[in-house]
Image (cartoon, helix red, strand yellow):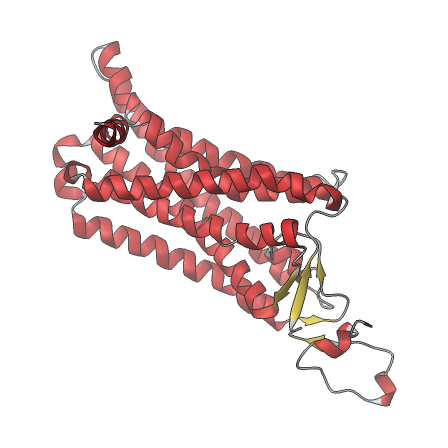
Length: 332
């Protein structure tokens, strides 16, 4: 059966006349086509295996963290509350891209509704900013716990923790909103094929027949003023933490105190290192093949949700002990 031309499948066409019959201008296309990983279509099924494995580990790990913290009253404290917020963020972030990606790889289901595409764009940017914000909140918790331990319970009370979490959520939601509005306002008249596995903001707006400088500048603004500011705050927190640690009298005390920050530092590296690598390759790696850009972008969004529960499960003694007790109790 002959395929319906794309210009007839899109909605909300601009005024049409004989004088512009050679143009195909339209706004708000009804669907986009996600291409997957261009050039590696034959290997999509094999590529899906590690991605599906990462997603499965992320689901199991983060739900386990939430279950253990909810069940153990001794873990009801600021550090573990922030960890639960991070786990929920990881679950939403990975779920926002992986199911559709697997449908492309396994069933060749490439079509995505225009509104669903913009929603996916919003969720990706919103929860990425939220994850970065929760790392700042956890750095604040470590700073207070080490630099002012006697006042830790009075400074980071449950209402304060809840307010910090709310600020992080609202900030992520507000900073991601312009991506939604900018993508919706452009006129799309080239193609509806997105050369990616998900609807990233730049991957979508590059299809627009308009000057998208505003989108580019806002993306850079978000990176430097949002993520960059978070990295600065984390760096300042750990500068004060290291200063307090080096002032401790013995090496054992220094190592023990620094060990309480180990999980957080590993999680920070797991999040910001792929993010920095993806950013640098996107903006400066023009000679790098497009399929490599797409693979790194997927790893950047899936690696932290998979690694965070593993890092905290292995390196945090309280969680590790509760997890071992849970399994040994089931065996007996």
